[in-house]
Length: 267
Ligand SMILES: NC(=O)C1=CN([C@@H]2O[C@H](COP(=O)(O)OP(=O)(O)OC[C@H]3O[C@@H](n4cnc5c(N)ncnc54)[C@H](O)[C@@H]3O)[C@@H](O)[C@H]2O)C=CC1
Ligand SMILES: O=C(O)[C@@H]1CCC=N1
Image (cartoon, rainbow, N blue to C red; front, side, top):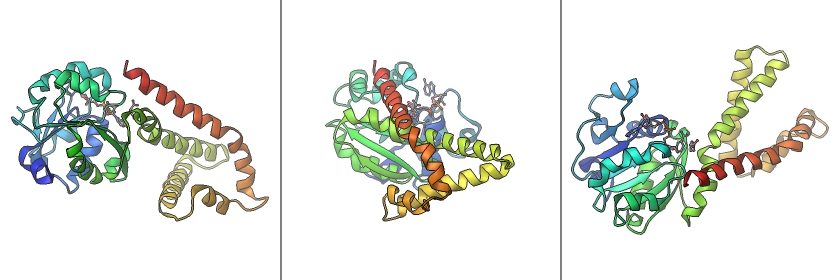
């Protein structure tokens, strides 16, 4: 199966909220056109309703190439049974739901159903996401197609085991929220030092965006890039002395809490 199959047979999005829309926005920037896509969502956004050619809440093709499941884990038991007819067949189920095990799909759709579990993140909306993937035995042959699709909205990594998914969710799935909060905190701290809100936010956004880009593209590791900013006895050293006393433990506890929640969602 390849991208042409996806275009010929269709891609179904079950749930198209924040994550589904982030990915769809990325795909519609080049990889797919709206008429290749069927969306099932009881509360479609204005953006979805404005996409010419998109099959919005229309009857589904008999055997779509892929169903992207992007409903909340808590909605799964309501949403998934209506797709039972597509189970055990040629349709690949690609799930991005946190804490929802492959075994749950096999139980609902039949254990001959190809299932790929993926954890993307919202920077997919601007082609800068990262998605981790793992498949059941039936889904494994479709991993290259899922990767191709997901690489249209960023990078992909394959996991050795589904057990890694809780930690991955806590680091890269939830991670953008930690970074956005860092931007908020940096801007607020700038305001506390007398900058106006607009300037402080512009400085904070560009600093986090630029530092992220440099960290991703430099041959130096992040520790060395940090050292490069830090003049002996300078301003950064004074700031880092405060930050480094608390941040490592705080981040460790943050990621542990998110990973624990991912484990809990499995029930
Ligand atoms: N938001 C994020 O950053 C990420 C979210 N995810 C996963 O993506 C999934 C969706 O999360 P969000 O997009 O944030 O939530 P959301 O609440 O924005 O989107 C869920 C969508 O599902 C729709 N929906 C509800 N019941 C439905 C049904 N029976 N059939 C079809 N659609 C239905 C809702 O109307 C809504 O538009 C979750 O499972 C989450 O774990 C994964 C990675 C990152
Ligand atoms: O907060 C959540 O549960 C989802 C999964 C990763 C990001 N958002």
